[in-house]
Length: 121
Image (cartoon, rainbow, N blue to C red; front, side):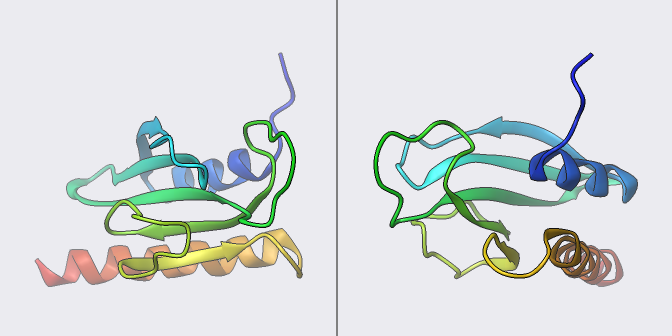
């Protein structure tokens, strides 16, 4: 069995711990959308968000899937461009600082989003 690692795996594990589930993985065939996930709260299908792995606009040369990611954005709607932040909930910049610290801050923002949705009903 292949050892599970990498930032996508870490994000997935943190989401699972908090009762989120990935219901779809796709890409919209734009250069900047490496892939995006549709994530839904297990206990309420009304609560969901998109998680988009955004490619660095300065990336040059041939790019393999998962390579050159510079931002991970969670939003209530599918992004329309690489710098769209109109419906942004949280994001992780893939530059500077330790990923695990940024991941915890990101997850906290998603939990606040979930709380806001569950208390609003």
